[in-house]
Length: 405
Image (cartoon, rainbow, N blue to C red; front, side, top):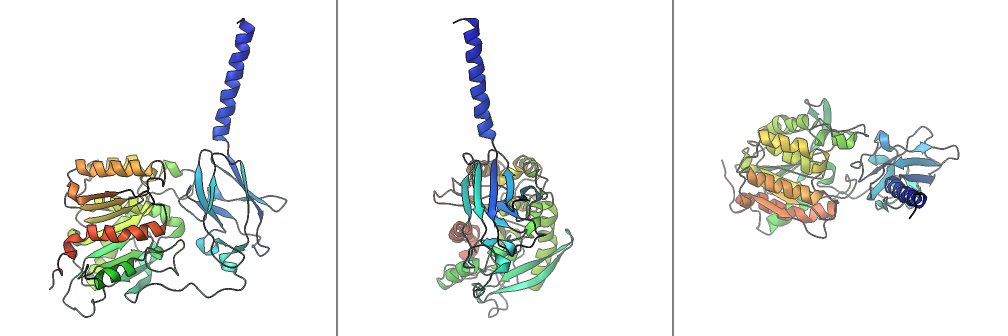
């Protein structure tokens, strides 16, 4: 082989590698070829999906309007399989179908697609012939504690829900465990949910009727703040979200609100068992992450931790460093669950945290770990897994009728 031939082959190989690298990092363009004629001219359109924590108005995911009336957005490279929906900046303005019904999440594999075209047929806040409002599914034991509970640590207000056991009013001397939950819109009521409900109230009602939960538990659910969800559920600013407006960093203040403001109020106004052994905290995705952080920061407050499909990836190194300085209580109980196909990192990171807690001295008997093959990053999955999590976390209470005063 002469020198010229060798150089030519080398150049061809280099060119092939360059093309392969370019293909691997090529961006996908989302294009809206049609939107409703009623779309307000001044409104911005956004895509919210699995790639941006379902933020309905992340500036980095705003579509740009073209002169031909279409809307386009270049997505970051390397996202792979994703799910998403289009909004006008909030879940109240999410896209719906032509029959005024909600639509399933759109799905695409961005590792292969270069342009994906869609049409938005209608917006949720502009339903033409509006059907009957979504039926409320919350049980009679659910009520709104406050439509605008003050969060002094964050300078905000938030709707807070409370579920009281069926016999709460009939047993004035009975005291109850309390479970605090995030994403309150999705905990009890399909009418307020943007992606399905957990059915926590129905689950606890059924367990009580079946005699499997003789005392019951008070459940306090705090709505997420929509655009502030990432801020409040991530303790530190996340490098993984650096292209977004809301990158985290307010999780510490949010947990301070739960432990020092909301819990203080609940313990003062309801008949609670205020110790950590009878106080739980639970959530999914970023809600699972912030629940673990809460247990580390306040080990004497939260002793029962439900961790559903946790999004550790957004700040795993920072959380691990925090855990070294603030170890979990050895008496704490953790229930971990996720689907092995939810993401490439979720199950491995969840396993790391189980092992980390075990190394810190949390007994193996206090660490439940499940990864059912059918699991998905959706409310129906968390609803299905909640009964087992609840029975594990509050098992000491379930065995007795609970202390009274």
